[in-house]
Image 1 (tube, one colour):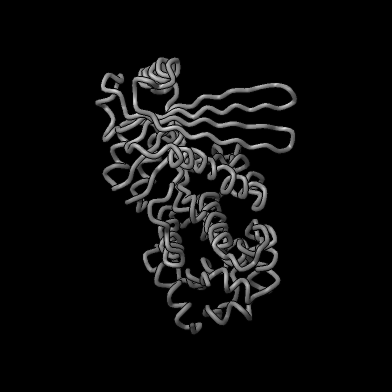
Image 2 (tube, rainbow, N blue to C red):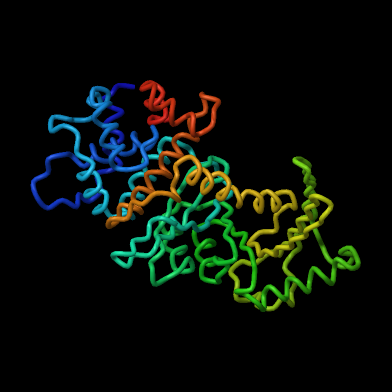
Length: 376
């Protein structure tokens, strides 16, 4: 593929990105975006590093970009990314990524929240930003994220995120915060199914599910249909057994009629033995489809992939929790850059090393960086 075609393809996805600058533009907006993405892939964790990367890689970048005006300063990167609208930026980057990576049909899409702990600004009374993200568990791709408004919470942010996503044919999993009737309706309207955790924020529903399973466990589900699955894991002095049960939704379940397309209820029991001590945890779920027990178990386990494969990687490899970027929209947009870089690095499968070493390699080897960028 020629450089011209490759460059044009990237630019095509950013045509709808509004340039926030009102004065005469010195540096093309596509330059800001591409240099920032490449720099974050290669290990840059702030705007000083992005500008330095641009200067050191100017010759290589000139193959794809018009650099007649040179490389912007770190202040310029900061100012522009602080002014770009995160929703537009997210949409453009997602459009680009999804053309590089075919999303697996029918996979689990996990939705969960994360706070950028060091993004608060006491001087300007700005609280730490909280992001709600969607993670395609099979492809390990960040499908989108949205900033939770300071005066709001995840309940209002999740519907806005769902509007951004193409979820048709997917199985959407959300923790208890997202167990809301309107969110369930929106998921079904989008052509997807849901697996929603049920806790104390839906007390009547939770109590009804709990009483149902307690009653039928006593006689080993002799009087109701059930699908069951069990796993066992051992290692590091710990033994963990997981028991999954899923039943058709009972006719007399309290609150049943409030939930769109409610078809099944599920229970996941985790029993952990460590150092001679046993700890048990029980979680309840509602589902819009009567899955096999194994598929239900996979959905429950896959949901935590957003913690282990997205949030953990962002903290450990990209140092997200330590980032003090907080001017304007810069914190949200830099978070979007990190998730984009992580998705691209995870998609590149020819190098059999972890994400940290992929970032290092991309910084050292321009051919490998190009491979990460174009998805080949």
